[in-house]
Amino acid sequence: MSVDPVASLILDEAGPLSGRVFVLDDVDGALTREAVRQGADVRAWCDDVRDQAQLPRAHVFDGLGSEDWVPDTVLWRLPRAVSAVEDTAETLACWLRPAGRVVAGGRTKHMTPAQNDALGRAFHDVRASLGRQKSRVIHATGAHPVHPRWPMRRHLPEVDLTVVARGNVFHTNRLDDGTHLLLRTLGRILPPPTGPTPPPTRGIAIDFGCGSGIIAAWLAVRGFAVSGIDVSQQALQSTRMTAAVNHVSVGTRRSDGFGRTPAGGADLIVSNPPFHRGAAKDSTPSLEMIERAGDVLRPGGELWLVFNSHLPYLPALRRHVGVTTIEARDRTYLVTRSLKQPESPEV
Ligand SMILES: C[S@@+](CC[C@H](N)C(=O)[O-])C[C@H]1O[C@@H](n2cnc3c(N)ncnc32)[C@H](O)[C@@H]1O
Image 1 (cartoon, rainbow, N blue to C red):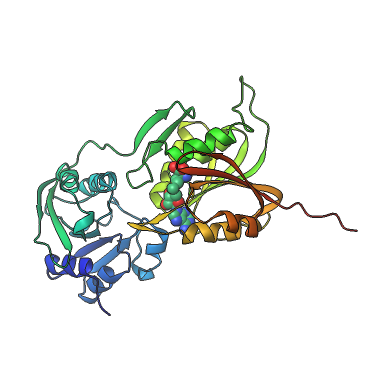
Image 2 (cartoon, rainbow, N blue to C red):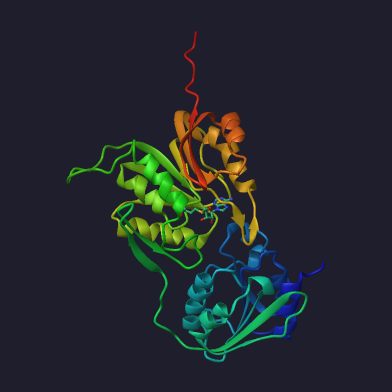
């Protein structure tokens, strides 16, 4: 099987693999399989559940930071966001011994000096390889524990919530403009509770693609029993922290799409749906979500979305969910409300 240029450069720069090797965000499992073939003691983890599904099952390990198994070498496909590099570098620096090494690679066009700086906060020696086939590797050794910056919290007065986020989460601890427009619009029919009395119990809601959990916490404050769904483990960790700091409870599920969400179980789905996968624009997960939303909603339930106005979601919303209205728009976004047709009475 051919290995892509990034994985190939990481393997060449790492040299022969032995001892304990931890493989991080190995999107197609190629690094993990090669390290196993060379006879190393290999464990692997991906933040995105879709990438994790590509790993050989026996080597999947959710123990980043565990004291029982400390790697000698980390092979890492770098994320693009500097915040994500910084967050993981902090964790690795607390985990590795000073002699441990990180061999991290990516596409040159997605790499910036700020990523070296992020690694440099947690490792004494950081150096970049020569580029090859538009790819590059960073070597980091000399791990030293740092005062962690991540997770980061921030109060968002616009939505009266505090958000707590890991570094590999959409917009980290900030409020996305689309999410803000969505919540402002939904707030017209779901105002915040007033006074010390708890809000009325409103039903079951899903925040699809919950990220840092802003939408999930906002709905929970208003009395919904909320589940947040996301492919990313760091997103779900962030959602749980955001819920806790706002004194509400939110369930979380790591899933690609609705997964095993029962049919007819939700009164409300609210989402700022995904439009990227890694560096690439991709509307497929959102269209698949819309296709299943009609099934997941109870009759009379509603799907509220915000999305970039050029995206082709309106026909799909009308076909798979029901009557769809545009509730707000600005220069970039549309906010839509789709009503799942109530069941017609038996005659
Ligand atoms: C545009 S962000 C919105 C995040 C957050 N709800 C907000 O408003 O700030 C979309 C989220 O969807 C998640 N996501 C991407 N593909 C997904 C899929 N197939 N199933 C579930 N979640 C997905 C991403 O990890 C990301 O957190």
